[in-house]
Amino acid sequence: MKKAYIIFGTILFLTACGTIRITTDQIDGSSFLGYETYDFYEIDFIHYDSLPYNEENINYLKTEIRRQMLKKGFAIAENPDLLINIGVFVEKQVQTRETDPRIDMNYIGQRNYHWEREDRVVGIYEEGAISLDFVDAENNQLKWQATAVGMLTNDEEKMKKRISKAIEKIFGKMPLY
Image 1: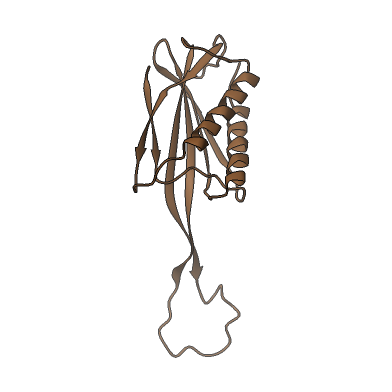
Image 2: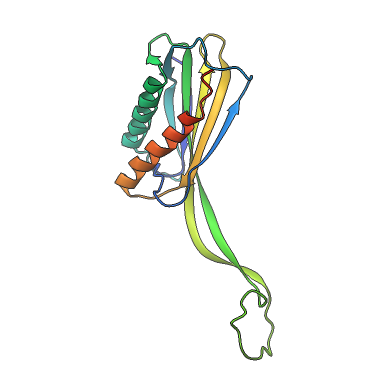
């Protein structure tokens, strides 16, 4: 079986706050017409920062993909037409705000000292991305790629809802015809 890689910087948890951004790329302009079966690439896990992956979350992600593939008319098979590669990426993000006397107009008084405009850190968070590659199994050619990006959290219930929503949004953009 072909192998795929999932890279983790932390456990995958997409939050319920914030939006999920979806990007897609239809490689050759064709559709999934004529494809009926699928399976997943075998997954090898790579760990960064010595943090373990959460197998339960990956299994939930695959369950949601299976559910959406069934809705689209695809069946899972040992010798499939399509292979799905799952990628998970995590990156720390820094949220800043700019300090500027023209913006902070509530100041009253006199500044007889050096003061300059600067970016102040107001939050640090992790952003995660789920990437799905749909590959023609016969010729090993990428057909379609979709990515969902959102903020991360440790709340299990929010995570499951967010994964479901992200996968549903991805499959809403899948070019069947």
